[in-house]
Image (cartoon, rainbow, N blue to C red; front, side):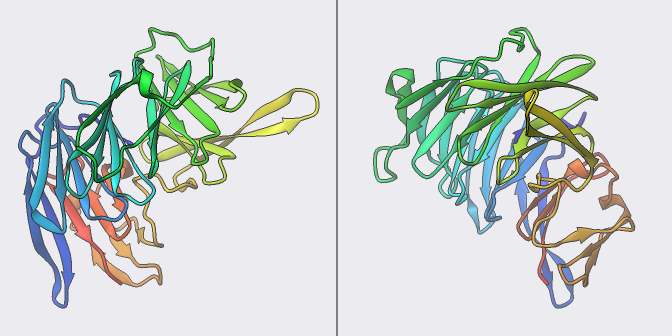
Length: 331
């Protein structure tokens, strides 16, 4: 997941709306200190990352007084949550440093100088894994009751695997990577113009399983399905294409293209979970098909990537909105 600019004039507030017996009411407002170009909701819906004007701001939806803010040197960020949503690993695109945050408090647990440009990372309850086109490096996380903001570098790592892909150009303008949930596979997207490439690696053997060239603009990170057999990526706003790698008796591992589709597996951020739907005429439907809310016309947008879902929370942030809106949905 990542944050980047979408607005010429960035909004400066987020509105959190909550269902009541009389309809949706304004529940809380959050002020962005430096404008808001993108936002990300934690898996449990209790925290919001706001990105804008070279800063990250973290707000707690359950505690209006808890927030933290940190200045950064540029606009694009990569954020990955731990499976339980309590930790977040944050880095800047093209940087060599990773910060692991306690999402509830906003405190920094660990700052790592990886000694290499970071394409992507994955954080678990006890480790953080960092990848670029040559190496996959793993660090242990400090215990939660230790001194905050522990420092580490490559000498403190506990494991390094080599995954060299000779086709990746060092001068490519953007490179993003995702690590499969079982930490066995890595997908790297390399953006060039007018094409982009998807490279798939096997971590235990260091083998490059295959590389394919795709047409289109390309957006952000690829992601794995839970069984790690498929890799998906955004090729146009709201549209995803995928790849699966199959065994072929003649050619060995062979890529097979999947899609395009606007309903890919793996639930990327713009798709709802828990069975929610948004109809073409703006109705939000519950898992039973019940109409929960009809979005006002100026809250709608054909660009579905302007939405971020997390559980029963829906965030809207697109060019037709003067301010960001978050809805907390209930059946």
